[in-house]
Amino acid sequence: MNEITGNETRDIILDVTEKLIYRSGIAATGMDLLVKTAGVSRKSVYRYFTNKDDLIVAALKRRDERWMHWFSSEVDKASSPTERLFNLFTVLKGWFDSEGFRGCAFINTSGETGDPQDPVRQVAKMHKQKLLDYVTRLCVEQGVEDPDALARQLLILIDGAITVALVMGDHSAADHAQDMLKILLHA
Image 1 (tube, rainbow, N blue to C red):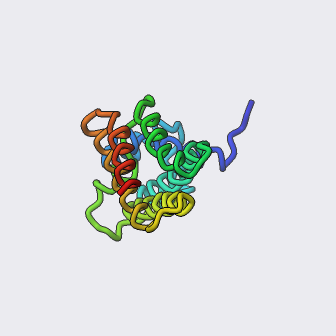
Image 2: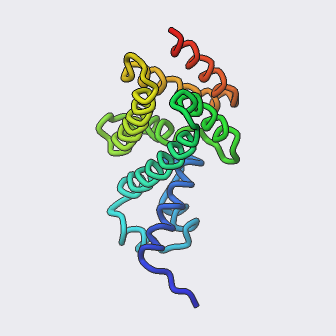
Image 3: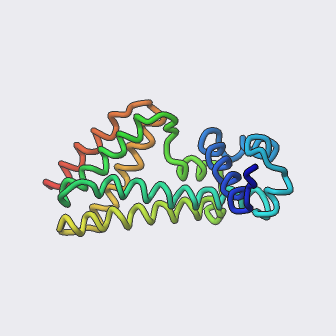
């Protein structure tokens, strides 16, 4: 008989929390649903997390690490700086077309919080800053005149494409954003 360790229990709780909040949002993810879906006791949840807010923040931080690693690894497969910039949107389109795509978890959960100082909003801000830093690095590698400005414009295109893909169901939003990148690079 395989015994589940404490770390495995914690990972199960985080995995289930992330999936539930990505699918249905924070408000719809009650502790009863989480406990039932994870197959753990409420006591187990509170052994690792002080409250639901701490659990949500931990799940989002974990998603940030995993998503950023996946995204940058995929984008970096392109062989040249220019191709990597265009690959930002090719990778996004592949994500849009994947089963279970529900937009950006950080935009979605931020929309559920009103306070800019809320820990969920702070995690979302951290995620977007990491994404901006990554895109800025790509712009520096490309050798553009103002990499910070282009990176900020690309972040808007990235988040705009994600939002349009989710809200409108238009996965070609990534193609349109890529077309805008062509204009920005030639401006």
